[in-house]
Each structure stands twice: as structure tokens, then as C-alpha cells.
Image 1: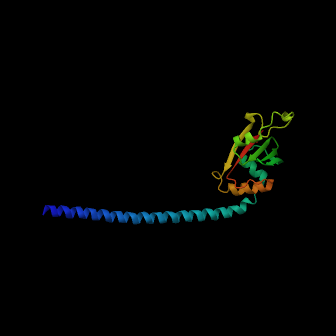
Image 2: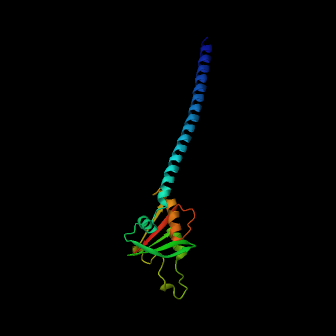
Image 3: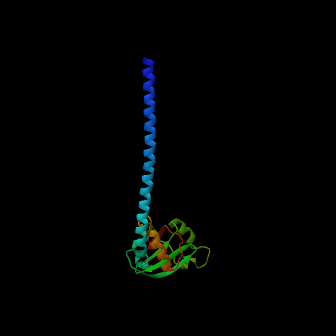
Length: 175
């Protein structure tokens, strides 16, 4: 008799375990669906917000935008020089200059260093400056601005440089 009660108790515990397992699986599936729905809703909200901001991004003035992103304490006046390979833009300001590129600073530095073998290489002004204490580097990206990529594309078109798909720009303030 006690063996029968023990078997029935064991069967009841196993049955309850199966019921709990089944219920937990259904809840997990429901939670996954709910999480996916929430992610879709968030994506729609972001897309709508970006579409609204896309119209504003096309109205951006490149000198003011670059000055703000670079943190330059002087006004920018004009595009001094630009290159397509490697991609960079050199802008002149009232008290210095700003170089903008989609490349990392170290990568850009390697690509644009002057050739010391040429006779007049010292006559040219170094693109990234020569005094480290007068150079300030900052990076703008999607982490700091939700529509950075849209604005950067518009700015690239305004200055005549195709940066392609840009997720960050390096700003080098010299002055």
C-alpha cells in the first residue's frame, strides 16, 4: 500500500513537472513574440523620427555644422582643399583650420604624411599640422547624434566629396 502511494506521489510530481515545463515554454514563446513586437515598434518609431529629421538634415549649412561637430572656437570661412583618395576636406577658418575625414586619425596621418625625399616637401604646410599642442582631434558618430550619417552625407555633397556610407567622421582642429 505504501509503495502504491509512493508511486502515485512520484507520478503526480512528474505530471506537475511536465505541466510547469509546458506552461513555461508557452510563456517563453509569448515573451519572445512580445519582445519582437516591441523591437518592431521601436524600429518604426526610430524610422519615423529619422524621416522627420532627414528633412532637417538637408537644410544643414556645412561650415556651421563642421565647426560645431569639431568644437572649433573660431569661425570657418571656406574650403581650402579636398581629396577624394584618401577622402578628406581641409577648411580654413579665422584663426586656424579644420580637417574632416571618414578615416581614423592614425590612418589618415599615415596616408597624408609629407614625403621627406622630395626637395620642397618642407615648403608645403602639413595637412594635420606639425605641433601636437595645437592639434585637437574629435570624432563624430551615430553614438552622439541619431542622424549623424544623414547629415554627414549632406555635408559631403555640399563640399564635393563622396564619403560613401559614413558612420563616423574625424575632425582635426589645427590652430
